[in-house]
View 1 (cartoon, helix red, strand yellow):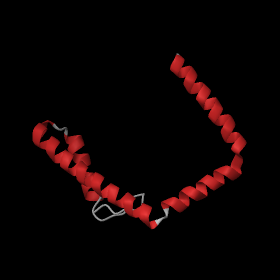
View 2 (view 1 turned 135 degrees about the vertical axis):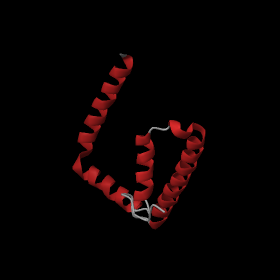
View 3 (view 1 turned 120 degrees about the vertical axis):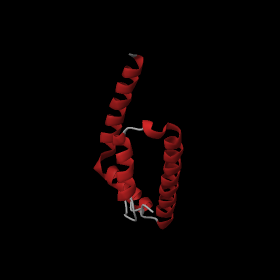
View 4 (view 1 turned 60 degrees about the vertical axis):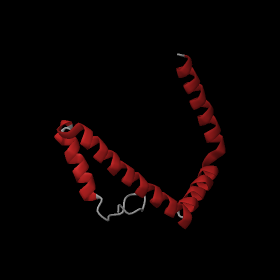
Length: 99
């Protein structure tokens, strides 16, 4: 109950502060976020992180599949295969390539 009350209080305070900041401050934050996300250095780091994540996921998949073998449900194995096929050289929603 204490955590729920704390959450509701935080939500109320955030709402009040957010409405006081107004639309102008929201637009400023949105513009700043857009500028940061379009920075070439940030995009390169994001792409590198995405590639590293994909490599780690691939290694983890192989390590797990070696240990569990045929115990992986076909639905999971099919989903992984579909994701691998879909990711061949196509850009994702973040503008990074799936190579």
